[in-house]
Amino acid sequence: MGRSLFLLSLLLPCLTASAARAEAITVPADVGIGPAGYLISGRVADDQPLHFGLKLSVQAIIDQATIQANQHRIPAKYRKQAKQVSEIRISPSLFIPDAIFISPQLEHTGLYGVTWRPLSFGLSLIRTSAFRFNLSAGLLLTYAFLHSDLPALPDTHFLRPGLDVGGEIELALSRSFLISFGWFSGFYIPQGFGTFGLGPFGDKQTSATLRETMWHLGQGFVKLHFRFPYTTNL
Image 1 (cartoon, rainbow, N blue to C red):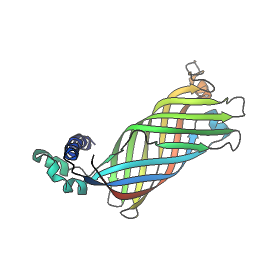
Image 2 (cartoon, one colour):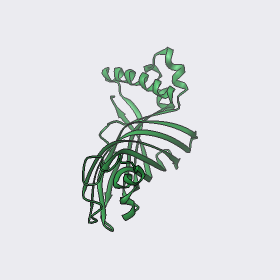
Image 3 (cartoon, rainbow, N blue to C red):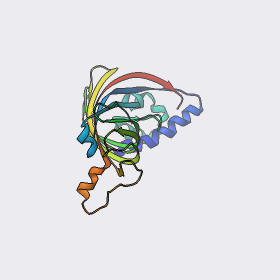
Image 4 (cartoon, rainbow, N blue to C red):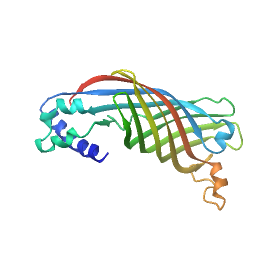
């Protein structure tokens, strides 16, 4: 991962300088989308264990083929290091959501909202041409509107930063079509139901009072990935 971060810091200035000379670059673009299920620990899970939504990803992929095709843009003294990095993935915008909650009220509780993941770090434990197993952790920002007809779950505008950690398995069915599935657990500053505050969290019986807040959101998902060449002046 350290070499990947080094090369990322190296390539971006080089490519940007090339763009200033109106020299385009073509990279593989990966767009992933698929269904997701969400488990919100505590009283929400007591009423409805599973909520639903979408998992999204949009990434530009700088792989060895891209690096080799752009050797002339990398200073000669760094080309050896560049050959040691297999792949770097870059999201083109911080405003692209990581997840969208679309979960109508099936029993008593519904959930709608969005999560952004502006910064993440990943590590490929296993990587072949057709199989990849990644672990990653990231920063989160989530807004969700929870509504319920249960007295214990007053309407709540959940707005919190958080951290997540999880794993994803990616299978390449062809060069342009892949499928992935995984699980992430997001941990947030607790928020009480019906308030922006911490609710009862902080009392002596913490294990009991955490049930009265939103603080953990588990996410299981399946994504279909479509890859295509994208040419741009970075």
